[in-house]
Amino acid sequence: EFTDLEKEFEKYIRAKFSKNVKENKLTKIIKQDFLLRLGSMTAAGLIWFFAAYQAGIVEKTYSVPVETTKIPTNVVIQEYSPKEVKIKVSTRGEDSFKEISVKDFKIDLDFSRLQSGVNKLPVSKNIITAPANFSIISFEPSTLLLTAQKYYPAEIPISVKTTGKLKANLSLKAAEAEPKSLKVWVPEGFEASTEISTEPIDLTDKNESTVLPVTLLLPEGLRLADETVSVSAALTIEPTN
Image (cartoon, rainbow, N blue to C red):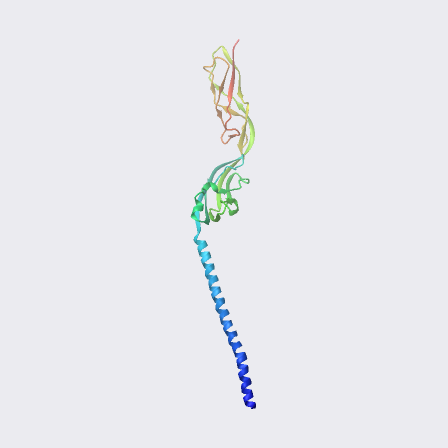
């Protein structure tokens, strides 16, 4: 009887607990399979997303001219190289480039510290402005070579020059320029001239006082502060006693 009781108890234990064990194992397998499938789907989704995103990225290179319009007034650029900076940009979709041209790019070079002679100007990403929604991938060159000449201001009197002789009964009482002096730029390292001469005025055919335009003979390297200025000479001619 005791043995029969033990057998019945053993059956009860097996019936009660072996099923739970099997269910736990099955649940574990299902969970593992689900996680594997979920991980695979997530990875596949990410790969698809980035592949699709990258497939829509378009790159293009623009040759942007270097502008020297912000040069200080006391500096003249004699030569610079290269004349253009190649900028590679990217954005999504080919259509984004339809309305874009080199005029939409800006290179803000710093000309404030130029010196006479050869200058090296760095080109960096933070001085390049690209259109909105465009990413700058690369650019070249990274350095711009520029030859400059610095000037200092001066004001120099104009001297009216003449050639030839008036008739015997006439004399030249005065020859004055209008304006009497000019503001100029003198190359750094050179002394300012004491005067600016005009081309000689021939007096041979002059019979009376007159005012006429004259051409200036600027000393080498000198620059007029106002390139549009015009100069006249007033000749005072009187009869001799």
